Image: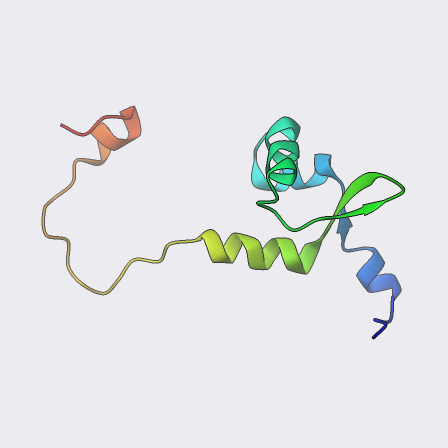
Length: 86
């Protein structure tokens, strides 16, 4: 089954650099995710590329949403920001 390419779908193809910028991460981290097959990608003449809708779905699949249940303990956010829980 062939999918139809449109100018809109072609404009939604990202490079490693553009995905890293959108994720606020490094290009080396994106390349690591590719090597580990942890991010959806494809290759064009050996170059790694990403399709925007697949990246959006991938991000949503990693997102944790809070439940409507109240927290059991109060959490000191400043200690979490510093990287340790007291």
